Length: 189
Ligand SMILES: Nc1ncnc2c1ncn2[C@@H]1O[C@H](COP(=O)(O)OP(=O)(O)OP(=O)(O)O)[C@@H](O)[C@H]1O
Ligand SMILES: [Mg+2]
Image (cartoon, rainbow, N blue to C red):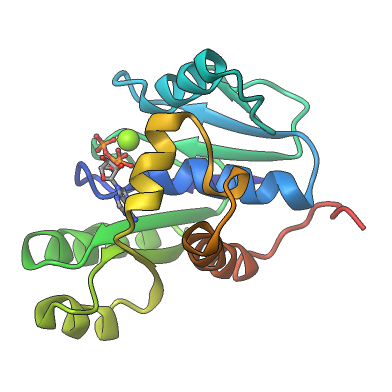
């Protein structure tokens, strides 16, 4: 199965969400690959950081599309894109005015291609009135703005490789997204 993580807007959390979803998926199914389509190579940088720190990631990261994997998580760059592998697009967006309108447009555009879109309001700050109002309109899931998530990237670890209450709260947010995906794959017992 293919899961595309996409939003033509930059810096909204595509790579972050792709990494965390790949890590969450690796706990429930085998042979997960994270495909980095971005010339910025942020996902590949993350896997290099993991290697440098001596962490073994539970999924493969590559910039090619290899065969033989059960789940492909595609981290796409911030450019307009028409064609997607599979039928599902995860679309992270920030919950501010400059991000929300582009998100709505991109969502309609992608849905017009016949894709299912699952939106993620990322870096959510419930203490900000503007964000709270947009969170009600997103029709998707929310991932809070968490230092744990940003720090995990720099350490080359996913939040699923971290312990503590903060990591557990972040894991729960990612798992909610995952639970909403219909996975036609074998799950671990
Ligand atoms: N939920 C979060 N909490 C805190 N920081 C976050 C969260 N999500 C993303 N970030 C931070 O926001 C920044 C942008 O995230 P990311 O690189 O994933 O966005 P992107 O959409 O992939 O960007 P690009 O368009 O450049 O590919 C990074 O510094 C990342 O650590
Ligand atoms: Mg990215």
